[in-house]
Length: 334
Image (cartoon, rainbow, N blue to C red; front, side):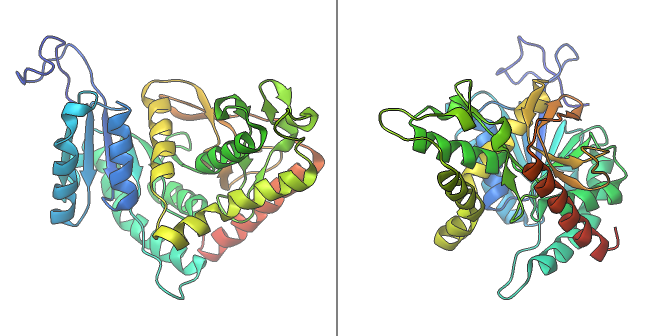
């Protein structure tokens, strides 16, 4: 159990009492993504305690100190950082960002192999430290790593899942918003499938302010979303990460915000629908592979997938994405 504090003691430092349970987030990996996830979660007040774990002692302690120095300007929280995995003990949510770094000339499959090997080492002791936590995998290639992590850990499918296409869907909504001139909060659309080159948008179920996207006729400042424009938007979503990595070396801000949204949905038991990568079981005939579809998230994790309407073309793309991922999983012996 995480530490609990009496409401009168918060901020006084008088120590724990059994009157009020607080929340603990553990972030594994203090690199660009991990540190930014911790920062975003703190800024949003997602958890009362944020613990950073990394094997690099100097790095993780420095990141924790830098974050802690800004607590005055954030919702009240405690930040701890350590190279001792015990810092993750009794976490409510564990976000795994640690993964193998891609080397020049290394293929995506090579990266997956190295990251799965790392997952084999770090996941069992993490589960031992926080057996009741909800585990969120962010390390790429996230679908295969999530599938491998489920096999390695033996955790129930609801308790461990990947960040999937939550960020990709945010990119999609942003680009639709930019074209239509409608606030991104009023755009509802999902990218689904693999978090990668075979992902695609669900245009059939998308809407703008309650208007089905295929029926959108545009405004004075923008025209309709023609098939050509939609194709261009989908292509830009898929290529976004490549462009950002080419320009700055990594993506970290938007993925950290996406992760913090997942964390909040879990800790606040929001039952929010987000397209995370979970193990499917007869989802439109697809089973035994992790890929992203709209999923209800709450305190028990990935509670259930929604069978959103799809066109025949979208259904075919989803099955192709699943088969591509299954081929990779088989290559690694899963």
